[in-house]
Length: 90
Length: 90
Image (tube, rainbow over all chains, first blue to last red):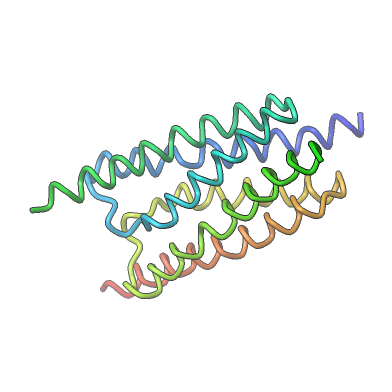
């Protein structure tokens, strides 16, 4: 019961820090700009998430693996959208 | 040696996904705006990081605890800056 309680916080944390990037992607696609979103932040964050995927694979942790693959894809889409819309400025 | 190798990826991942938010904070403070940064993303992400802190505390994991406390503080500053500058628009 107590152990279930601990796992609950871990899963809730993983779900929230993963789905969190969906509103950013939707906002970027809607407004067709992400000028204020830091490109450096996106690049470092995506790299870091890539290493979380490697780590999750190496320790055979499905939650780490799944959460980070989704986070990776969402942030890659945000990055691509940002670059795409910034090129469309001129 | 192999175990050190695995830990290396975990620490590298934790460092990158933590320091990643520093360029966003610097950009927001420099440009004095974060209009394109999703408020919903920030709120969900900060909540999720809060649960990572609780989880890290409960499983007594110093790396999870430390990385998420820093991520929490950085994103809280980004959120406060965004709200502060958006109020200054009018």
